[in-house]
Image (cartoon, rainbow, N blue to C red; front, side, top):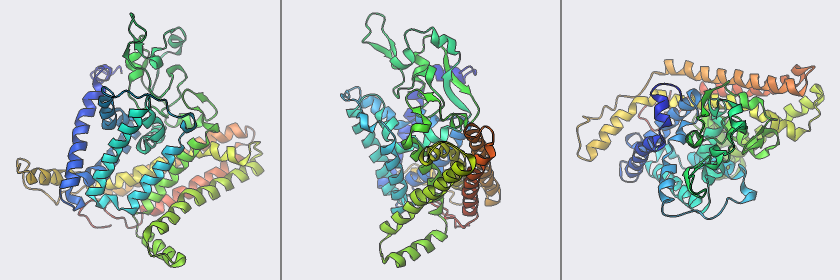
Length: 471
Protein backbone atom coordinates (compact mmCIF):
# COMPACT_ATOMS: atom_id res chain seq x y z
CA UNK A 1 0.00 0.00 0.00
CA UNK A 2 3.03 2.30 0.31
CA UNK A 3 4.39 1.51 -3.17
CA UNK A 4 4.03 4.57 -5.42
CA UNK A 5 1.22 4.17 -7.93
CA UNK A 6 0.20 0.69 -6.75
CA UNK A 7 -0.71 1.83 -3.26
CA UNK A 8 -2.64 4.81 -4.54
CA UNK A 9 -4.65 2.58 -6.87
CA UNK A 10 -5.41 -0.04 -4.21
CA UNK A 11 -6.34 2.73 -1.79
CA UNK A 12 -8.93 4.00 -4.25
CA UNK A 13 -12.37 2.98 -3.06
CA UNK A 14 -13.43 1.77 -6.51
CA UNK A 15 -10.22 -0.12 -7.35
CA UNK A 16 -11.85 -3.51 -6.95
CA UNK A 17 -14.78 -2.62 -9.21
CA UNK A 18 -12.37 -1.20 -11.77
CA UNK A 19 -10.59 -4.57 -11.98
CA UNK A 20 -13.78 -6.65 -11.81
CA UNK A 21 -15.50 -4.98 -14.78
CA UNK A 22 -13.10 -6.18 -17.52
CA UNK A 23 -13.05 -9.68 -16.01
CA UNK A 24 -16.85 -9.73 -16.05
CA UNK A 25 -16.83 -8.71 -19.71
CA UNK A 26 -14.33 -11.48 -20.47
CA UNK A 27 -16.52 -13.98 -18.58
CA UNK A 28 -19.55 -12.93 -20.63
CA UNK A 29 -17.54 -13.31 -23.82
CA UNK A 30 -16.39 -16.78 -22.72
CA UNK A 31 -19.96 -17.87 -22.00
CA UNK A 32 -21.24 -16.60 -25.35
CA UNK A 33 -18.40 -18.22 -27.26
CA UNK A 34 -18.86 -21.44 -25.31
CA UNK A 35 -22.58 -21.55 -26.09
CA UNK A 36 -22.54 -20.36 -29.70
CA UNK A 37 -18.94 -20.63 -30.88
CA UNK A 38 -17.02 -23.59 -32.34
CA UNK A 39 -17.40 -26.88 -30.50
CA UNK A 40 -13.71 -27.72 -30.95
CA UNK A 41 -12.06 -26.84 -27.63
CA UNK A 42 -8.75 -25.43 -28.97
CA UNK A 43 -10.73 -22.90 -31.05
CA UNK A 44 -13.04 -21.73 -28.28
CA UNK A 45 -12.38 -18.96 -25.76
CA UNK A 46 -14.36 -20.71 -23.02
CA UNK A 47 -12.11 -23.77 -22.85
CA UNK A 48 -8.84 -22.08 -23.80
CA UNK A 49 -9.11 -19.24 -21.30
CA UNK A 50 -10.58 -21.36 -18.51
CA UNK A 51 -8.44 -24.50 -18.61
CA UNK A 52 -5.15 -23.12 -19.96
CA UNK A 53 -4.72 -19.46 -19.10
CA UNK A 54 -6.91 -18.71 -16.13
CA UNK A 55 -5.73 -21.62 -13.97
CA UNK A 56 -2.07 -20.98 -14.71
CA UNK A 57 -2.23 -17.25 -14.05
CA UNK A 58 -4.28 -17.86 -10.89
CA UNK A 59 -1.68 -20.18 -9.37
CA UNK A 60 1.26 -17.96 -10.31
CA UNK A 61 -0.38 -14.82 -8.90
CA UNK A 62 -1.16 -16.58 -5.61
CA UNK A 63 2.45 -17.77 -5.40
CA UNK A 64 3.85 -14.29 -5.91
CA UNK A 65 1.31 -11.95 -4.36
CA UNK A 66 -1.66 -13.66 -2.70
CA UNK A 67 -5.37 -14.01 -3.28
CA UNK A 68 -5.81 -11.28 -5.87
CA UNK A 69 -8.24 -13.36 -7.93
CA UNK A 70 -10.86 -13.07 -5.21
CA UNK A 71 -10.07 -9.36 -5.17
CA UNK A 72 -10.98 -9.18 -8.87
CA UNK A 73 -13.76 -11.81 -8.78
CA UNK A 74 -16.50 -10.96 -11.35
CA UNK A 75 -19.03 -13.15 -9.51
CA UNK A 76 -18.94 -10.79 -6.52
CA UNK A 77 -19.45 -7.79 -8.80
CA UNK A 78 -22.69 -9.31 -10.12
CA UNK A 79 -23.73 -10.07 -6.54
CA UNK A 80 -23.09 -6.47 -5.47
CA UNK A 81 -25.17 -5.16 -8.35
CA UNK A 82 -28.01 -7.56 -7.51
CA UNK A 83 -27.95 -6.46 -3.86
CA UNK A 84 -28.92 -2.97 -4.91
CA UNK A 85 -32.31 -4.44 -5.82
CA UNK A 86 -32.65 -7.43 -3.47
CA UNK A 87 -31.55 -7.36 0.15
CA UNK A 88 -30.61 -10.69 1.79
CA UNK A 89 -32.75 -11.45 4.84
CA UNK A 90 -31.16 -14.41 6.62
CA UNK A 91 -27.91 -15.33 8.29
CA UNK A 92 -26.08 -18.45 7.12
CA UNK A 93 -27.25 -21.47 9.20
CA UNK A 94 -25.10 -22.06 12.28
CA UNK A 95 -24.64 -25.77 11.55
CA UNK A 96 -23.26 -25.00 8.08
CA UNK A 97 -20.69 -22.45 9.23
CA UNK A 98 -17.80 -24.69 8.32
CA UNK A 99 -16.03 -25.99 5.22
CA UNK A 100 -17.91 -29.25 4.71
CA UNK A 101 -20.20 -27.90 1.97
CA UNK A 102 -17.31 -26.31 0.09
CA UNK A 103 -15.15 -29.45 0.50
CA UNK A 104 -17.95 -31.51 -1.04
CA UNK A 105 -18.33 -29.05 -3.92
CA UNK A 106 -14.56 -29.04 -4.42
CA UNK A 107 -14.68 -32.82 -4.93
CA UNK A 108 -17.77 -32.53 -7.17
CA UNK A 109 -16.04 -30.01 -9.45
CA UNK A 110 -12.97 -32.26 -9.73
CA UNK A 111 -15.26 -35.21 -10.49
CA UNK A 112 -17.39 -33.57 -13.20
CA UNK A 113 -14.23 -32.10 -14.74
CA UNK A 114 -12.98 -35.64 -15.38
CA UNK A 115 -16.33 -37.31 -16.02
CA UNK A 116 -17.57 -34.83 -18.62
CA UNK A 117 -14.13 -33.90 -20.01
CA UNK A 118 -14.78 -30.22 -19.40
CA UNK A 119 -11.46 -29.19 -20.97
CA UNK A 120 -12.78 -30.59 -24.27
CA UNK A 121 -16.31 -29.16 -24.09
CA UNK A 122 -16.87 -25.41 -24.59
CA UNK A 123 -20.61 -25.94 -24.02
CA UNK A 124 -20.19 -27.62 -20.60
CA UNK A 125 -17.55 -25.07 -19.60
CA UNK A 126 -19.92 -22.22 -20.43
CA UNK A 127 -22.68 -23.84 -18.38
CA UNK A 128 -20.28 -24.28 -15.47
CA UNK A 129 -19.54 -20.54 -15.53
CA UNK A 130 -23.26 -19.75 -15.68
CA UNK A 131 -23.88 -22.16 -12.79
CA UNK A 132 -21.32 -20.24 -10.75
CA UNK A 133 -23.03 -16.92 -11.42
CA UNK A 134 -26.42 -18.42 -10.61
CA UNK A 135 -25.22 -19.99 -7.35
CA UNK A 136 -23.66 -16.72 -6.20
CA UNK A 137 -26.89 -14.83 -6.87
CA UNK A 138 -29.02 -17.42 -5.04
CA UNK A 139 -26.79 -17.88 -1.98
CA UNK A 140 -25.84 -14.24 -1.44
CA UNK A 141 -29.30 -13.11 -2.50
CA UNK A 142 -30.78 -15.02 0.43
CA UNK A 143 -28.02 -14.84 3.05
CA UNK A 144 -26.23 -11.82 4.47
CA UNK A 145 -22.54 -10.98 4.36
CA UNK A 146 -20.28 -13.13 2.14
CA UNK A 147 -21.75 -16.59 2.78
CA UNK A 148 -20.91 -17.85 -0.70
CA UNK A 149 -17.24 -16.87 -0.47
CA UNK A 150 -16.71 -18.21 3.05
CA UNK A 151 -18.79 -21.38 3.10
CA UNK A 152 -19.66 -22.43 -0.47
CA UNK A 153 -17.28 -21.39 -3.25
CA UNK A 154 -14.91 -24.28 -4.13
CA UNK A 155 -12.68 -22.03 -6.22
CA UNK A 156 -12.45 -19.61 -3.31
CA UNK A 157 -11.42 -22.43 -0.96
CA UNK A 158 -8.64 -23.39 -3.40
CA UNK A 159 -7.46 -19.77 -3.34
CA UNK A 160 -7.63 -19.57 0.46
CA UNK A 161 -5.57 -22.72 0.98
CA UNK A 162 -3.01 -21.84 -1.68
CA UNK A 163 -2.68 -18.32 -0.27
CA UNK A 164 -1.40 -19.73 3.01
CA UNK A 165 1.99 -20.07 1.27
CA UNK A 166 1.89 -16.56 -0.23
CA UNK A 167 4.51 -13.99 0.85
CA UNK A 168 1.86 -11.29 1.34
CA UNK A 169 -1.16 -10.89 3.61
CA UNK A 170 -3.67 -8.23 4.60
CA UNK A 171 -2.73 -7.31 8.16
CA UNK A 172 -2.44 -4.48 10.67
CA UNK A 173 0.72 -2.39 10.66
CA UNK A 174 0.81 -1.49 14.35
CA UNK A 175 -1.18 -3.62 16.84
CA UNK A 176 -1.03 -0.83 19.45
CA UNK A 177 -3.09 1.43 17.20
CA UNK A 178 -5.83 -1.22 17.15
CA UNK A 179 -5.70 -1.49 20.94
CA UNK A 180 -6.57 2.19 21.25
CA UNK A 181 -9.28 2.03 18.57
CA UNK A 182 -12.82 2.10 19.96
CA UNK A 183 -14.89 2.04 16.75
CA UNK A 184 -13.57 -1.26 15.27
CA UNK A 185 -14.50 -0.01 11.80
CA UNK A 186 -12.42 -2.72 10.10
CA UNK A 187 -15.12 -5.25 10.92
CA UNK A 188 -18.18 -3.08 11.72
CA UNK A 189 -17.74 -0.73 8.80
CA UNK A 190 -17.32 3.03 8.80
CA UNK A 191 -20.58 4.68 9.75
CA UNK A 192 -22.16 8.07 9.28
CA UNK A 193 -21.56 10.38 12.22
CA UNK A 194 -25.20 11.43 12.10
CA UNK A 195 -26.68 7.93 12.04
CA UNK A 196 -25.06 4.72 13.23
CA UNK A 197 -27.37 2.78 10.89
CA UNK A 198 -25.87 4.33 7.74
CA UNK A 199 -22.74 2.44 6.63
CA UNK A 200 -20.47 4.50 4.42
CA UNK A 201 -17.91 1.73 3.97
CA UNK A 202 -18.56 -1.88 4.92
CA UNK A 203 -16.11 -3.79 7.06
CA UNK A 204 -14.95 -7.37 6.58
CA UNK A 205 -17.86 -9.51 5.39
CA UNK A 206 -16.02 -12.71 6.23
CA UNK A 207 -15.89 -11.92 9.97
CA UNK A 208 -12.11 -11.47 10.14
CA UNK A 209 -11.33 -8.94 12.87
CA UNK A 210 -7.99 -7.47 11.79
CA UNK A 211 -6.25 -7.25 15.21
CA UNK A 212 -6.90 -10.99 15.72
CA UNK A 213 -6.61 -12.10 12.11
CA UNK A 214 -3.85 -14.63 11.37
CA UNK A 215 -2.75 -15.29 7.78
CA UNK A 216 -4.71 -15.49 4.53
CA UNK A 217 -7.27 -18.19 5.24
CA UNK A 218 -10.76 -16.90 4.37
CA UNK A 219 -9.32 -13.54 3.24
CA UNK A 220 -10.50 -12.44 -0.20
CA UNK A 221 -8.15 -9.43 -0.35
CA UNK A 222 -11.26 -7.28 -0.86
CA UNK A 223 -9.52 -4.48 1.09
CA UNK A 224 -12.78 -3.38 2.72
CA UNK A 225 -10.91 -3.31 6.03
CA UNK A 226 -8.25 -1.07 4.46
CA UNK A 227 -10.84 1.43 3.32
CA UNK A 228 -12.82 1.26 6.56
CA UNK A 229 -9.90 1.73 8.97
CA UNK A 230 -9.90 5.40 10.09
CA UNK A 231 -6.25 5.19 11.18
CA UNK A 232 -4.75 3.86 7.91
CA UNK A 233 -3.43 0.97 9.98
CA UNK A 234 -4.29 -1.93 7.63
CA UNK A 235 -2.18 -2.81 4.62
CA UNK A 236 -0.82 -5.61 2.46
CA UNK A 237 2.31 -6.69 4.33
CA UNK A 238 5.10 -9.16 3.64
CA UNK A 239 5.49 -12.24 5.80
CA UNK A 240 7.20 -15.64 5.88
CA UNK A 241 5.35 -17.91 3.42
CA UNK A 242 3.47 -20.76 5.14
CA UNK A 243 4.04 -19.20 8.57
CA UNK A 244 0.35 -19.50 9.42
CA UNK A 245 0.54 -23.26 8.80
CA UNK A 246 3.09 -23.52 11.59
CA UNK A 247 0.77 -21.85 14.10
CA UNK A 248 -2.09 -24.35 14.11
CA UNK A 249 -2.70 -23.87 17.85
CA UNK A 250 -3.17 -20.10 17.57
CA UNK A 251 -6.68 -18.72 17.82
CA UNK A 252 -7.56 -16.67 14.76
CA UNK A 253 -10.54 -14.41 14.16
CA UNK A 254 -13.37 -15.93 12.14
CA UNK A 255 -11.70 -19.36 12.10
CA UNK A 256 -10.70 -20.40 15.61
CA UNK A 257 -7.93 -22.98 16.03
CA UNK A 258 -6.69 -24.85 12.97
CA UNK A 259 -5.90 -27.83 15.20
CA UNK A 260 -9.57 -28.17 16.19
CA UNK A 261 -11.05 -27.81 12.70
CA UNK A 262 -11.63 -31.25 11.16
CA UNK A 263 -13.45 -29.59 8.28
CA UNK A 264 -10.46 -27.36 7.59
CA UNK A 265 -8.10 -30.35 7.74
CA UNK A 266 -10.35 -32.19 5.26
CA UNK A 267 -10.04 -29.20 2.93
CA UNK A 268 -6.24 -29.34 3.19
CA UNK A 269 -6.28 -33.07 2.44
CA UNK A 270 -8.55 -32.69 -0.59
CA UNK A 271 -6.39 -29.81 -1.78
CA UNK A 272 -3.18 -31.88 -1.53
CA UNK A 273 -4.33 -35.30 -2.70
CA UNK A 274 -6.68 -33.68 -5.22
CA UNK A 275 -3.57 -32.26 -6.89
CA UNK A 276 -2.27 -35.79 -7.43
CA UNK A 277 -5.70 -36.99 -8.55
CA UNK A 278 -6.18 -34.17 -11.04
CA UNK A 279 -2.75 -34.77 -12.57
CA UNK A 280 -3.29 -38.53 -12.65
CA UNK A 281 -6.39 -37.95 -14.77
CA UNK A 282 -4.30 -36.59 -17.66
CA UNK A 283 -1.55 -39.23 -17.88
CA UNK A 284 -1.77 -42.46 -19.86
CA UNK A 285 -1.71 -44.93 -16.89
CA UNK A 286 -5.16 -43.69 -15.84
CA UNK A 287 -6.73 -45.47 -18.82
CA UNK A 288 -5.06 -48.73 -17.84
CA UNK A 289 -6.38 -48.36 -14.28
CA UNK A 290 -9.90 -47.51 -15.47
CA UNK A 291 -9.97 -50.50 -17.80
CA UNK A 292 -8.71 -52.83 -15.06
CA UNK A 293 -11.28 -51.53 -12.55
CA UNK A 294 -14.04 -51.86 -15.13
CA UNK A 295 -13.23 -55.56 -15.62
CA UNK A 296 -12.76 -56.12 -11.89
CA UNK A 297 -16.07 -54.51 -10.94
CA UNK A 298 -17.91 -55.71 -14.06
CA UNK A 299 -18.84 -52.14 -14.94
CA UNK A 300 -19.25 -50.73 -18.42
CA UNK A 301 -19.85 -47.10 -17.51
CA UNK A 302 -17.25 -44.57 -16.44
CA UNK A 303 -18.91 -42.84 -13.47
CA UNK A 304 -18.62 -45.64 -10.86
CA UNK A 305 -15.11 -46.51 -12.04
CA UNK A 306 -14.06 -42.88 -11.72
CA UNK A 307 -15.75 -42.67 -8.31
CA UNK A 308 -13.65 -45.64 -7.17
CA UNK A 309 -10.46 -43.86 -8.24
CA UNK A 310 -11.61 -40.73 -6.40
CA UNK A 311 -12.33 -42.76 -3.27
CA UNK A 312 -8.83 -44.23 -3.35
CA UNK A 313 -7.07 -40.87 -3.81
CA UNK A 314 -9.20 -38.79 -1.44
CA UNK A 315 -10.14 -41.34 1.25
CA UNK A 316 -8.06 -44.51 1.29
CA UNK A 317 -4.67 -43.02 0.49
CA UNK A 318 -4.91 -40.11 3.00
CA UNK A 319 -6.28 -42.42 5.69
CA UNK A 320 -3.43 -44.91 5.27
CA UNK A 321 -0.62 -42.36 5.00
CA UNK A 322 -1.79 -39.88 7.63
CA UNK A 323 -3.16 -42.54 9.96
CA UNK A 324 0.08 -44.52 9.76
CA UNK A 325 2.22 -41.44 10.39
CA UNK A 326 0.04 -40.44 13.34
CA UNK A 327 0.39 -43.92 14.84
CA UNK A 328 4.18 -43.85 14.49
CA UNK A 329 4.27 -40.35 15.99
CA UNK A 330 2.42 -41.64 19.02
CA UNK A 331 4.66 -44.67 19.45
CA UNK A 332 8.08 -43.29 18.61
CA UNK A 333 7.64 -39.60 19.34
CA UNK A 334 5.73 -40.00 22.55
CA UNK A 335 3.07 -37.45 21.58
CA UNK A 336 0.17 -37.26 24.00
CA UNK A 337 -2.29 -36.43 21.24
CA UNK A 338 -4.61 -39.13 19.91
CA UNK A 339 -4.64 -40.24 16.28
CA UNK A 340 -7.31 -37.87 14.95
CA UNK A 341 -5.85 -34.66 16.46
CA UNK A 342 -2.45 -35.66 15.08
CA UNK A 343 -3.88 -36.24 11.61
CA UNK A 344 -5.65 -32.89 11.73
CA UNK A 345 -2.57 -31.10 13.04
CA UNK A 346 -0.12 -32.37 10.43
CA UNK A 347 -2.51 -32.18 7.49
CA UNK A 348 -1.66 -28.47 7.27
CA UNK A 349 2.00 -29.34 6.65
CA UNK A 350 1.04 -30.95 3.33
CA UNK A 351 -0.25 -27.71 1.81
CA UNK A 352 3.07 -26.37 0.37
CA UNK A 353 3.68 -29.71 -1.36
CA UNK A 354 0.11 -29.81 -2.65
CA UNK A 355 0.40 -26.29 -3.99
CA UNK A 356 3.71 -27.19 -5.61
CA UNK A 357 1.90 -29.98 -7.44
CA UNK A 358 -0.91 -27.66 -8.57
CA UNK A 359 1.69 -25.16 -9.76
CA UNK A 360 3.53 -27.86 -11.71
CA UNK A 361 0.29 -29.14 -13.28
CA UNK A 362 -1.27 -25.79 -14.10
CA UNK A 363 2.10 -24.38 -15.10
CA UNK A 364 2.55 -27.24 -17.57
CA UNK A 365 -0.68 -26.37 -19.39
CA UNK A 366 -0.14 -22.61 -19.15
CA UNK A 367 3.47 -22.45 -20.31
CA UNK A 368 3.08 -24.99 -23.11
CA UNK A 369 -0.07 -23.26 -24.41
CA UNK A 370 0.33 -19.65 -23.30
CA UNK A 371 0.38 -18.18 -26.82
CA UNK A 372 -2.77 -20.00 -27.98
CA UNK A 373 -4.85 -17.06 -26.75
CA UNK A 374 -3.69 -15.16 -29.86
CA UNK A 375 -5.07 -17.46 -32.61
CA UNK A 376 -8.21 -18.26 -30.59
CA UNK A 377 -8.97 -14.53 -30.19
CA UNK A 378 -8.22 -13.96 -33.89
CA UNK A 379 -10.61 -16.74 -34.83
CA UNK A 380 -13.33 -15.48 -32.47
CA UNK A 381 -13.15 -11.95 -33.91
CA UNK A 382 -13.09 -13.28 -37.48
CA UNK A 383 -16.26 -15.29 -36.83
CA UNK A 384 -17.98 -11.99 -36.01
CA UNK A 385 -16.74 -10.44 -39.23
CA UNK A 386 -14.03 -8.41 -37.48
CA UNK A 387 -10.70 -9.25 -39.11
CA UNK A 388 -8.63 -6.48 -37.55
CA UNK A 389 -6.62 -9.06 -35.53
CA UNK A 390 -5.50 -10.82 -38.70
CA UNK A 391 -5.54 -14.46 -39.78
CA UNK A 392 -5.40 -16.99 -36.89
CA UNK A 393 -1.84 -18.16 -36.23
CA UNK A 394 -2.65 -21.71 -35.13
CA UNK A 395 1.03 -22.65 -34.97
CA UNK A 396 1.47 -20.34 -31.97
CA UNK A 397 1.47 -22.61 -28.94
CA UNK A 398 3.84 -22.04 -26.04
CA UNK A 399 7.22 -22.67 -24.47
CA UNK A 400 8.96 -25.94 -25.45
CA UNK A 401 8.81 -28.79 -22.94
CA UNK A 402 12.58 -28.78 -22.42
CA UNK A 403 12.17 -25.42 -20.70
CA UNK A 404 8.87 -26.16 -18.96
CA UNK A 405 9.86 -29.41 -17.28
CA UNK A 406 12.59 -27.88 -15.08
CA UNK A 407 10.05 -25.31 -13.91
CA UNK A 408 7.63 -28.11 -13.01
CA UNK A 409 10.30 -29.95 -11.05
CA UNK A 410 11.29 -26.74 -9.29
CA UNK A 411 7.71 -26.12 -8.11
CA UNK A 412 7.41 -29.66 -6.72
CA UNK A 413 10.79 -29.64 -4.98
CA UNK A 414 10.13 -26.18 -3.52
CA UNK A 415 6.78 -27.38 -2.18
CA UNK A 416 8.42 -30.49 -0.75
CA UNK A 417 10.95 -28.51 1.26
CA UNK A 418 8.22 -26.11 2.36
CA UNK A 419 6.22 -29.02 3.76
CA UNK A 420 9.32 -30.39 5.50
CA UNK A 421 9.88 -27.01 7.13
CA UNK A 422 6.31 -26.82 8.44
CA UNK A 423 6.44 -30.46 9.57
CA UNK A 424 9.65 -29.89 11.53
CA UNK A 425 8.20 -26.83 13.26
CA UNK A 426 5.11 -28.81 14.33
CA UNK A 427 7.31 -31.70 15.46
CA UNK A 428 9.36 -29.35 17.64
CA UNK A 429 6.18 -28.35 19.46
CA UNK A 430 5.03 -31.96 19.83
CA UNK A 431 8.34 -33.38 21.06
CA UNK A 432 10.60 -30.55 22.28
CA UNK A 433 13.28 -32.95 23.44
CA UNK A 434 13.29 -35.31 20.44
CA UNK A 435 11.59 -33.55 17.48
CA UNK A 436 13.06 -35.99 14.93
CA UNK A 437 10.95 -38.81 16.35
CA UNK A 438 7.80 -36.95 15.38
CA UNK A 439 9.30 -35.43 12.26
CA UNK A 440 10.47 -38.61 10.50
CA UNK A 441 7.05 -40.32 9.99
CA UNK A 442 5.57 -37.19 8.46
CA UNK A 443 8.69 -36.49 6.42
CA UNK A 444 8.27 -39.96 4.92
CA UNK A 445 4.67 -39.09 4.00
CA UNK A 446 5.89 -35.91 2.30
CA UNK A 447 8.60 -37.88 0.49
CA UNK A 448 6.08 -40.43 -0.82
CA UNK A 449 3.75 -37.70 -2.08
CA UNK A 450 6.67 -35.87 -3.67
CA UNK A 451 7.84 -39.06 -5.38
CA UNK A 452 4.32 -39.66 -6.74
CA UNK A 453 4.19 -36.08 -8.01
CA UNK A 454 7.56 -36.40 -9.75
CA UNK A 455 6.50 -39.71 -11.31
CA UNK A 456 3.35 -38.08 -12.67
CA UNK A 457 5.29 -35.19 -14.18
CA UNK A 458 7.45 -37.62 -16.17
CA UNK A 459 4.47 -39.47 -17.64
CA UNK A 460 3.11 -38.69 -21.14
CA UNK A 461 0.52 -35.97 -20.56
CA UNK A 462 -2.51 -34.85 -22.52
CA UNK A 463 -2.09 -31.38 -24.02
CA UNK A 464 -5.66 -30.48 -23.20
CA UNK A 465 -7.55 -27.70 -25.01
CA UNK A 466 -4.71 -27.22 -27.53
CA UNK A 467 -3.81 -28.60 -30.96
CA UNK A 468 -0.51 -29.96 -29.61
CA UNK A 469 0.10 -33.67 -29.26
CA UNK A 470 0.97 -35.48 -26.02
CA UNK A 471 4.61 -35.46 -25.02
